Amino acid sequence: MSKKIIYLFRLESGVGHRFDVEFDRPPAGGDLPEWTRLEADKCPHCPLPNAPDARCPAAADLVPLVEKFSALSSIDRIDVHVVTPQCEARKRTDTQTALRALMGLILATGACPILGRMRPLAHMHMPFATTTEMVYRIVSMHLFGCFLRGEPVGLDGLDGFFSDIDRLNHAFFGRLKRAVQRDAGINALVALHSHSTLASLSIKPEMENIRVWFQQTLAGDPGEIVPGYRNGA
Image (cartoon, rainbow, N blue to C red):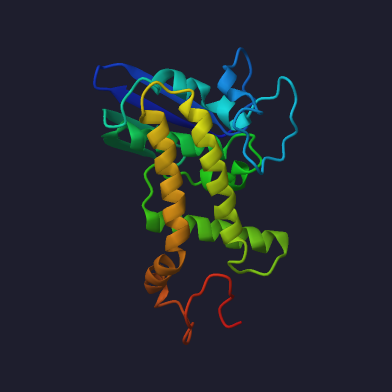
């Protein structure tokens, strides 16, 4: 049975929307809008081949969200209720923050070969994660991935990971800009990009802060935590 996370939104007008994000969903189909065409604003490092009817999988997945929220302003208030298999979370926030959380989940669980690298994070989804929480999760995902692939366990490769996401976000910004009527969707993507950029810039200082959590479990002097180098290497 496919894993599913549910997002429930309640607008100030009283209108409600529900999004069921299936992890093993089939590719989005049907009558998709022009802005989802793969060749339109295609990411420069996208490995997918062009074809007359090819669609950007990330864009196609966002069509239902854009159709429901494109007319809203990013500062409109909204109630969010997130239901995961492990827990539930509720927050009253602005539309931009709410959509950033949902967009991040949808994009990480879709068929985009670049964004799919964040899929492990979706299994431990935190709708409104702080920068510290995001850094902890990204570094943990990266190190565990190194271990499973039999690679040296270190932080090499994180710069490339963030660079790929940054390039994708810039290209996707142009695509989404043609789809939305107001600024909620655009600002959500900008916020998502800013959050990932902030995480990349914060890796070293945040790891030094997180290091305090491990003081009672570390044996000896672990030395400075430096991205790209294994401790003691």
